[in-house]
Amino acid sequence: MSATPQKNRASRRVLAAAAGLATVGALVAAMPAGAHDRGHGHGHKPRTVDVQLLSFNDLHGNLEPPAGSAGNVSKTHPDGTVEAIPAGGVEYLATSLRTARKGSPYSVTAAGGDMVGASPLLSGLFHDEPTIEALNKLKLDVSAVGNHEFDEGAAELARLQNGGCHPVEGCYEKGKKFKGADFPYLAANVTKEKTGKPLLKPYTIWKKNGVKIGFIGVTLEGTPDIVTANGVKGLKFHDEAETINKYAKELDRKGVKSIVALIHEGGAPASTSYNYDCDSPGAGDGISGPIVDIAKGITPKVDALVTGHTHQAYVCTVPDPAGQPRMVTSAASFGKLYTDTTLTYDLRTKDIVRTSVQSANHVVTRDQPKATDMTRLIDRWNKLAAPIANRPQGWISADINGRGSTAPEKPLGNVIADAQLEGLAPADKGGAEVAFMNPGGIRGDLVHKASGSEGDGVVTYGEAFTVQPFTNMMNVVDLTGAQLVTALQQQVSGANAAAPKILQVSRGLTYTLDLKKTGAARVVTDSIKLNGAAIDPARTYRVAMNEFLAGGGDGFPALGQGTNKLVGASDLDLFNAYLAAHSTAAAPLTPPATGRITVVQ
Image 1 (cartoon, helix red, strand yellow):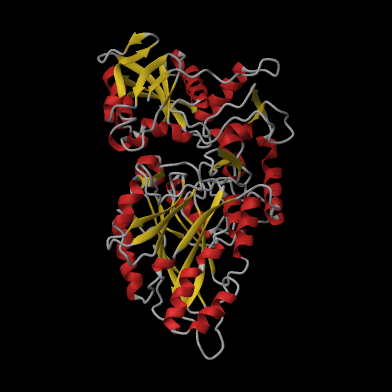
Image 2 (cartoon, rainbow, N blue to C red):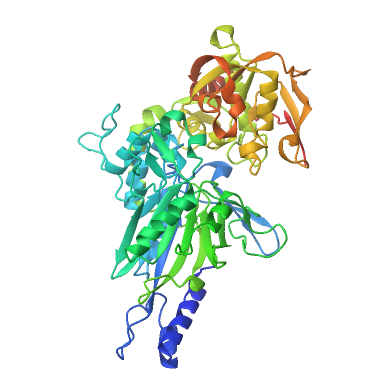
């Protein structure tokens, strides 16, 4: 269903009422969508124009279509059946956006953060220069920063914005200097500790033919909790709503009355289908999560919120502080969807007519023509990446799902945790007895179908990198049994109470998760066993995990209390070593059984 037919109705009503003439209403109704901003003869200047806002979020450098189930979008049909639609890939995203812009004289494209970071090898190997180049070609007008924009620190973020070759690796292509982003990255709520000044621009004003719209961009206040300490060194992160309100006031004083907030924080709709009606009134319907409280605290001066971070698809209304409905949208992740929002702009008041804002998510399907300029870009970078990307690392007998698995215990999570335990168990490597992996660090699935010419079942370095792109160094630390139990409880309490983060655990660790209970009680403590023996609260255990978790990241302060630290190889090196040790072409690795965590629902 296209959102076009009904989206001009409300603006027509406003026009007809403003003019008080039935003839104007009839004239407008007979004109094609987007045409009623060109004047209607008889000396009547139109009162409103429709501005098309196209938005997406959490691309994470996925230039090629994401493989396996991580590349699907769910759609619920009227009969209740759910269809998985393969989506995404920047060749299709470009075509979708370019097609959507046709017939819209006023069109602006905005992003909700995490355009880069945790990227597949094609982009990640080159510090995401290919993605910035692709976004420039997409004619992105503005983006908020997300937490992943800070993965490599403020200096690298500045380089992505301003250009210049990588300080260590230099220029990737002979005679070509990286130009940086043509669009502003906005970071209104990120300031430098030393000066108190914003790290990047807090807002930008988009202008066309006298139409002016202000965009304010923020990342989640909790960014330091989910990025390595080096990435956020010397920076302060402030409250999202307070920051947006401050700059909305400033824009208002400058005469900019139409304002859109780009917020890298999100929520969870009651259904994971992209076409779910978020405003349906049933019990348990709607949206929950941090964005709801943020939205309720943002001044009515702001007309729409483009959000992200949770990788969910939604088009919802959340009441502003004055009780008026306001649009809050998110377009899943990896370029699988884009949101098309119509903002009716009143030329006299210079404000958006909020009652007529229409919005819908659209699937970036893979059955449309590819944008040839994006194909050329992908081919160019793939040639540079090929010598590294195509090296075989191991063999699998079937898909091993990680990102695409919705279960608390993911088959690929078990493989990764086992790889970390095996690599760090020898006495001289740390003497690990158990390993923990954070679920958010699993960025893809291992897919059996060949991605290139390597053949089905072959895992290439590029595919392994896509799963583990951070190249986090591994740590082995001492933790007491009591601290271990507390860490498992922190999966479902404290910072993770509302949205549990279930750690992936190495073989030998078993316990029961009772989702009928609330908070920390959801972890059944007397069920926690290591190799069949109950955890002894007083005993010291050697625990392996990546440096991010070992720093207490992702809401696990207990894991940050480790002592006697030994730094091992990177997570990716251990993953590749495990694939090599446990698979051959004749005897590929099979997806491991799950059952380490018994879930009671």
